[in-house]
Length: 109
Image (cartoon, rainbow, N blue to C red):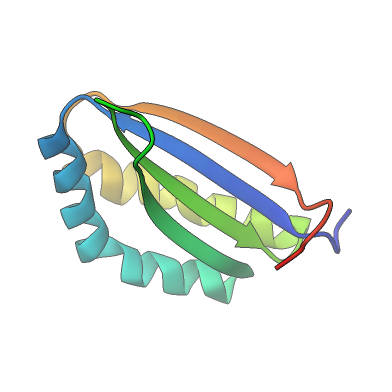
């Protein structure tokens, strides 16, 4: 399994549109450095998406791919530090976070 691509898709539901927009401002401010650190540890793709098919909901999706289980493990440590040292210090409001992890079975891209 160490040579297989690992994916991570996290849905983040915000209580209001303003909270979601504030998150995008946070992304603009911090994710360039975060993504560099993750790439250096084996992350191969990183998308931040706005989910548009949930009427009346304010949802963002983070899609990441890692080159291996080892890369995922290394990047998970970066995420833990980022979430406790950066995100926790600037976030406001209650959000619902639903992480999903997977192993790529087929790639038709």
